[in-house]
Length: 367
Ligand SMILES: CSC[C@@H](O)[C@@H](O)C(=O)COP(=O)(O)O
Image (cartoon, rainbow, N blue to C red; front, side):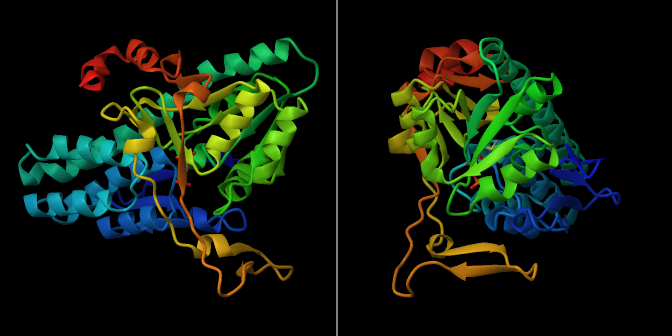
């Protein structure tokens, strides 16, 4: 997508053909710093410390992390270590393991001398595939928005949680791709952006994306969604996911479940947009089986922002003696999900729905 008229992806290869360029998302929306990653360890830090985040971008960064390692040392020992270090960065998004398994499966059989070239080529292909997948998610999802627009006057009001925008993927986003494509088709949309405490990905990232593209939007506190749904001010919810089980349970940013409950109670359609690498075909019970990342408590007790002197600073909002508890994701059971918007079409959130959409995985899912 464009930033000040210049097209960007969220990750790309440097002109030296070796270093990997990312946007340090911890500094948005106040700054737009582009950072060079030149070692596998830096790629791991970028994922762990959330310079890059969002399930698809975590996977793409891990793929390039493997490539950086192969350029430095293509030995079997280094390959195994890179897999282990990158895999340990964040536990919930399945795209991380998907990308690492893909890279290791490609690289391990090759002679070490061929590994760096193959790794860079595959990492680039993973990025290109992600862009195309997300473009197609948008093509399927925009039909939902167009159908609502056809039967009402005024804008289609869409609520989204966290950032499942282009910054969370390589381009387009998942939840935002239908929105960008609706705007491109001239459909009148308005987006309710959940601030998404504690890290405020909605306030910092989704709001920035919407503002950058001139898309009408309002930032709302996480607690406002249910109220807006009760009053008929939300036509549609679209969120992303970090891991979707073979039976359609959706693990996404903390607070997603509460939005799904409110949507269910008020009859608002609740859709989840996902690229197929976000499906964990081996997992059937999201609540029991998906590891939920526990992050530092001070992400809850402190907030980042820009002060009146334009300094980006952190302030404490809780007493010194109060510890924060910070589960970063929750699981929305499939029964609360209206549909899964994938690159192949919109699937019912069920084992049957997903197996029919992706029959090549049905064998794994049944095990
Ligand atoms: C297309 S991104 C889908 C999810 O990764 C997104 O909704 C989300 O929860 C991101 O969490 P984050 O902790 O910022 O990595």
